[in-house]
Length: 334
Image (cartoon, rainbow, N blue to C red):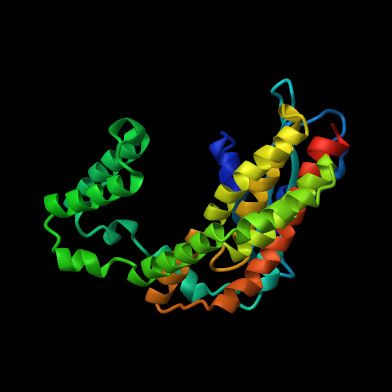
């Protein structure tokens, strides 16, 4: 409970109906009691029941560390038992960002005041265009959902939506084209051509098949190899074509282990490994390339190796945590 001041606690007490408020000594005493309860909560055993489902949620908050107010990430794990009972499993302060970006995470009173003075409504300069864009976006989403019935590919639906918005709005075509991320599109074109070539020549298939053959008939070994192998390969090859290539191989593995609910771990291993592994490099996921393009346009360029330096650290930790969860959920506690 470090960093809790009297004012927010006093405001909370008054909101609950106590007009007299609360004193500083009472706040300190209450926080001290909460510290002890929180510590006991964090160290309590959680083996009293099984949790088939665990959901992770993250947020950012201000806390006091060494007499300084800093930003800390908070990850909350919520477990749901077989009876539907929900329980908070753990609250962990994630210090990775604090360690990796310690030179940047410094409180600047002037910058904080500038941010608080921003008015979000001022960013919307054309309300009519906003409503037109939202209407076209709704139509595009409907088109995505109904594309099997309409017999239009999602790419065609997206292009039709872009053309419709240009037609109904007053924005000049040249002005709209200036906002297109042409370098990003060119990069994706080259990337998918290269990945397609690797798929057609059998390189990705051979690598994926080698991973499947290396399991040795062990389901735990297959799951661990799949999650870590997918993480490594998804950092080199965009995770979308990688998953498309690995899906039939994962299906063969699941069939070899007898199918059923027990092989869900293989699909979770593929999903978690490919998803989290895509954070390792700039080309591991499409979103990474888009973000780098936007950052460069805003004069905050992020180089490939700068991204990789932090991406590898984040990927290593998150994939290890995911692998540990899969091991506990499907093998150790099953």
